[in-house]
Image (cartoon, rainbow, N blue to C red; front, top):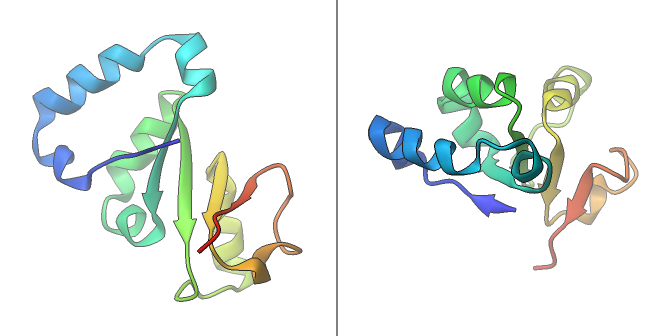
Length: 102
């Protein structure tokens, strides 16, 4: 799992070079790009494009995330959900949820 600096979206050439490096089915299977939920909301089109290109995306949610059925369904597009909140343990599919210890 690798964090992706949102500022890279302002540098199209760097993003293109990065994606060219990991644009391989074997790498795409193992390499996961992570964003916070807030970063996703602010860059939804660009991140959705990565998802449509076959990249695995993880989203980090914290205690500020408003958990309701609508927001929970919005998380369905992500390969993984990262959190440091144990309260989400019983809410999300265990295979997709990764709890990061504080």
